[in-house]
Length: 377
Ligand code: GMT
Image 1 (cartoon, protein in one colour):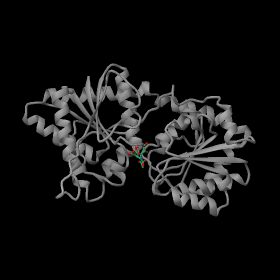
Image 2 (image 1 turned 90 degrees about the vertical axis):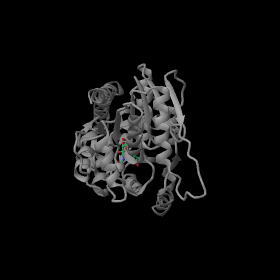
Image 3 (image 1 turned 180 degrees about the vertical axis):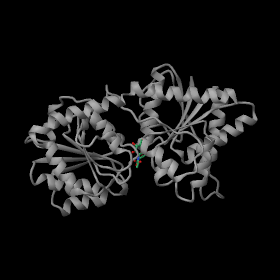
Image 4 (image 1 turned 90 degrees about the horizontal axis):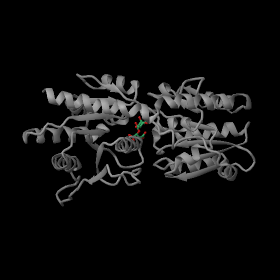
């Protein structure tokens, strides 16, 4: 099948999922055409089935805001016609779904029927999408897509709650490559960070307010009072300076390392003992899944779709958003010698349910359904 994939090409979860999906489908023999404004971050190897088309955004003195959505729709029309695509798969509703629906209409006028599959990822529904400044367009593009998928049951329910959706939404959870994300005995790396056998605690995010990185730091400060540990903070974003100041204020800076935008996160996760995700909103929590695949238990909030992945009392614990005290107690419970190994083993068992090999066929089925729908219209 020839599939056009549209996504944000950056470090964000939706871009990572879209890129890994394209790479996985290419390995299975599908021809994948990424249509984005720059090279997707994880598109870092050559494969004869992978193609990249850059959206040309022309500026003009009249434009205070260059119309990206129009440039994207035009590029989708162009690539669909000239590469003879079978299906367009857009990740993140804003503005990808509406641009795809526009491209579909344009192509229809030229006698070409192209089905659109839209995957909802989270903030496109729960934060940005439901805002009145975008809601009517998001509703329209969800209803006009041929197939719509959401990355968790919670996100599916939220979509019905916030939008006047008149169609089915299929849940296709995010996935992990178990060959890449796995426990590794990189003792030299662990020893370099934890020279005295400390426990290694990790948080990965884009340091936006919804990630509540300050809670991570406060939980870590509490853990330190009982268990010698080190904290690695991976990622970057608007809250980073605030979090750095907090570490100084709490006098724990010596035990915290900020790694910035690290690409090979599997190297850090593969030697970690605990992952913390206290988010205020999280439709799925891809970073937690990647941690679990590396046998790392998770302390998290119970926001959004996280409890579907992090099974309370089994793979880690979930608590009310902001309950730093309970998260601390749960972290200490996991880190105790008698509990750590069983939580690690459980994390891997659960992560295996999200093996890329199991999830890819669900997307292939979604494409076939979309195609069949278009053919019978
Ligand atoms: O979480 C973010 O800030 C990034 C965002 C994105 O769109 O890139 O992530 C969303 O999609 C990920 C992949 O499906 C999910 O794992 C994240 O939970 C989701 N984030 C939120 O819902 C806040």
